[in-house]
Image 1 (tube, one colour):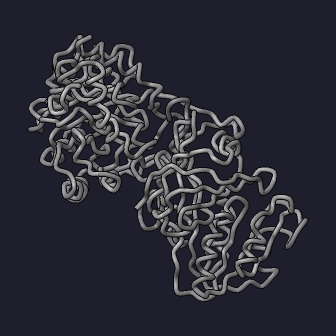
Image 2 (cartoon, each protein chain N blue to C red):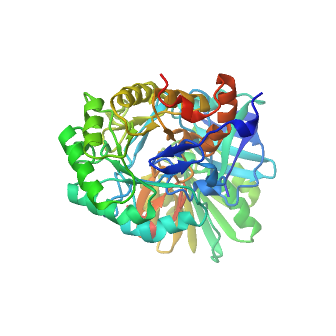
Length: 245
Length: 305
């Protein structure tokens, strides 16, 4: 069950030129799964801004966001101590399946929600590989934190400045990453390519402009093989076999 | 201090009693079930449920939502499961948690569709709200709402097949809303809801194309409140039937203002999208606003300006 509450910014620091990590203190009891999101009220903006939860614990959560527009630019100006009104624990996140060998595939700013997922899957004793794709070495973030969790990490950069040159799909092939099930979040072309390349089932987190973020406005509905799904409510995580490309 | 119990917030719409004038507006409250996860929705005066059509509709492609100064554009396009599912499944589910009046909002693409949809939804509705003003669907809705003769025709046809009070929901995208309102009243409308959204557009200048996949969408939110107050005022002075005022209402003070303009009930729309508790908090703030302004009964101030 989602909740609404005031959170306090603990820290807000850049990880790259455009990607920031914000730690927030507040009631996180509504968060039940990795891949869920918060919806943030920002002064002067009418609609809240939905941002995926990267990780959480009792009393604090972390979001990692890329500055792409007015809302995220405003987020980046906030200092520690600032108060933010958040809707917490929104959406249907990633869920665990019996598969032993799993791969988590993230592209760019799609990487953050996979961190909390990796932590959970490793705690469950699964063999976790993480494949992260970025444009260039200077845009890489979180890869060391995934390693610290005990995951096998493979990085791909489009320009070859670090790791495998090319896409995450190229990296999976080049490094011989084997898996029975995949989880992914990132740009649509990447998700689609991964779904087409993978013979087995998996879960993908999709993105959409949202009105409310909690299922009442029907602003973010996608057609799927199992009916209409509101990405804020039945999503953002959908089964590969449900997605209509 | 006026004693709390002496403040009377109840209103009546064509014999339907509301504990207070607050009605979440159609399209901003789903079918009530999601809101019931946040609070006991029986505190509401009534609920106007998601616009229902004869046949199920997916709606428009995404993006359907665009941010605006003090508001938003939407082009959802009447996504709904169709009237038969609403009557057999959706309203019964709502009825398990909600006992207060239901305003059934109906849209159509032809006179036949309006008539048939209203006929089928009549048994589960306390009030029927006929949307002749949706700007987001082609060849439907708005075509009926921008022509006085067509608006009157829809009203007549719907009245013929319904037993519940019929409110016609009017569009602000017209030259003279009073002419449309009068035509509906003359055709037998029991009440009027106004206003629906104002047709708008945003452009993504980087991509050089509209933000919304539909191109245009309906503007709502605080930005449209003064337009709604003006139109409610104009129509209230020209018509005798009760009005549900709608458009940008964001606070208890806005409710009082809308009622002074001539609204008997007040719909809260986009505010529900920003804050799931908006309608509840607006109701809770009414006492303080009434005390501040020396109002003992909200019914006293309807159309007082």
